[in-house]
Image (tube, rainbow, N blue to C red; front, side, top):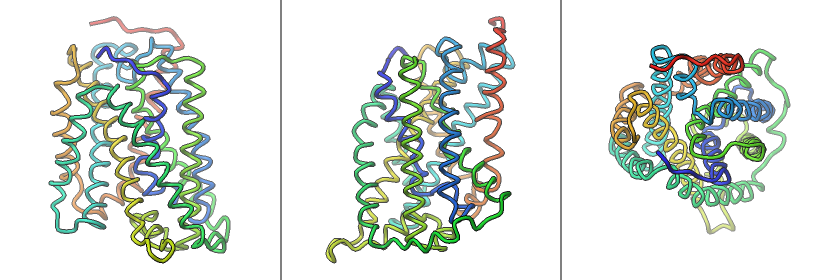
Length: 359
């Protein structure tokens, strides 16, 4: 696991991971017209969280969240917590795969079995992840500019469909629902950045990298605020009930009366983001298993981890409705220990300077 990448490359992975599936699914819609405010607040919290994760790693010799758990909690409790994180990485990866397969069969390939789509996607990710973090970084450097170009093209083409009256009333929900929307936005996608700690042992963490990471999260949040605002102002109340609201907005585009079906760009944008996010989850699960079982290389764990992700994506949710309900109502609370509570505890223990005895 000796590859090392420049942090300037890592920021592409950070951006792709955070925008990932969220650029299509759009977090914060529980707040309805105030979704953009919820996402803006979520972004501010996300900026603090990425700085926190970097600090946690830097005071623990550049270790990832799994390494920190074993280092600070000991070989028994530490490995139990590390195994919990591997489960979380696998579960998050399975959610991404299911999002892709549901989207593909809903809007593009209704006759294609979801299993077939999942297998193709995971085979691509296995090939990428087995080649190491440097290959992942280079892949992301190539595809993120494409993602950004498509996002800005879609926004530009949708401007003539924007109806700002759809954003009124500006704050239609009570404070309790708004707080829930902010909490949901923090858990997805910003606090999921805890997965990104698996990249930190492969790069240098310093003040410059801290600034770059925080700035990248801020830019990602700006993209999501823009996507929310354009989608709601285009679709109105329909945006709050649509399964894939940004895609539905893109369907409204007719460029110069001859370029139609521009929503293909929306599909490609989602797929690029999902692949980046899935690659990090698969990499994290594989590296985590290698640390837990004291293996010299993570590569042997990539295929087993991918098989688990694929099976979980198919078996854990019976249908799209169950997936959406679980993601909205349960996921933020389910993810809270992994994203904030355990890292917070590890940070306190690290500041106290308590290091567990090695096995």
